[in-house]
Image 1 (cartoon, each protein chain N blue to C red):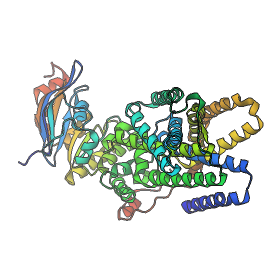
Image 2: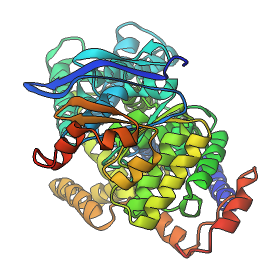
Image 3: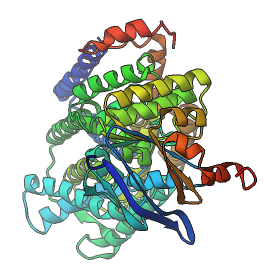
Image 4: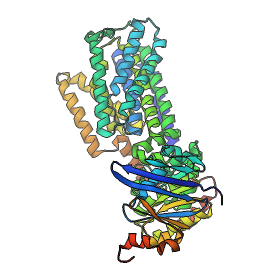
Length: 241
Length: 333
């Protein structure tokens, strides 16, 4: 196998006395979709924030394409090919959908006309083109989640971090988003995804990493993980296990 | 169509302003016009940091005062010619922004406003207490009494400032990047934007023209003192002009500057016994603008128009246009 695109080496992140992520290691191979799951408060989003540069790890390191990126600021990571979405969506509410995506396009297309053209293409892919001139504040939740993906995609990333882009959508919207994610995988994008909806995460992930109380408790294919006693215990309690 | 009509209107206004002094010989009128143009410049410069970047700078007046004092000191004490001193006034304001920006740009919202206000008070106190500014007595500059010269100098300077800012903020990517910072700093980081850098650039871009205008003002009025150039009024008026005109639109603040300055002139000409009322009205106007026209005059006008005329999508140069035509049924919004 080739060198993994992302390597998380014993990452620990503490906030004061609280250890949110505790000595977690795993890697992501090029072209795969890896699902990061775990009960509420397991440390998934914290780990995302460490990988995307919002937090520096307390211990351990994150290696992306062979380079140590631990502690590098998010805007630097966007430049090397890491795109991310936010669980609590962060649209530029006062700007139009097109402007939102154009801003992200500036990274690879410094000229405004090129960036706008690129933004249109991204919006066509994500199905927001018909709402391009709407204010981002006027979008539905589904629309705003789509906008998050559009902005991350406009960076032309090689690695995408998706934080709960399906949660909160109705089944039709969810299916459209899953379809989009599969399309991105087909285009060669590597994806690390946090998701609560099991139906979705089990179907799209090549591998799963399971966190509980900040620790990695299991890793493997969806089938392996779902029969792992530790995982069952984490989700359903002692007796079920 | 819209832009070409806008350009035509601007061209007419510019032409009118250029030939006006040939028709109007009254020095008082010329003086009022010169000051009005200066306020347009101050308002649009303020809009860079306050409107586009979302950092309400209540110390804008400090840049103006520092520009004015730099020119005063350089001309009267170092005996530099005006044209050498003027750009140094802009540079002094830029340096002030750089130094003041490092601590204050970490703050947000009201905290930034309070910190910048306090800083401008501190600078005023400094000017009152040190020797080389002349303290409370102020400073007299060599008089160069040529109203026409100052009218044209102000007009051209503000015209150039307007063009540069318009290009950077409305045509180049820089303006959109600043707006991204204004809307969501954390979100902007994930898109490759460095907020610290952009905010600093914006603060300096706002300071330079303000310092230059302060320098022209000093040479024109020939007398500066801490209360006229470093007082609250410069900041306060800039805030009202921009909030009332429409933040982050460049044209709005220019419109706001014209209206507020006209009001001020009329008020002081006819109601000078009630000067205290002027500040009260100014304060009330901020409150009223924020509550009833949060987008300002210009923002409200532009929005009305946008609603009346449905937005059409400019055809992108490549094939995806066809795709959307198939995939997307007509939607009224």
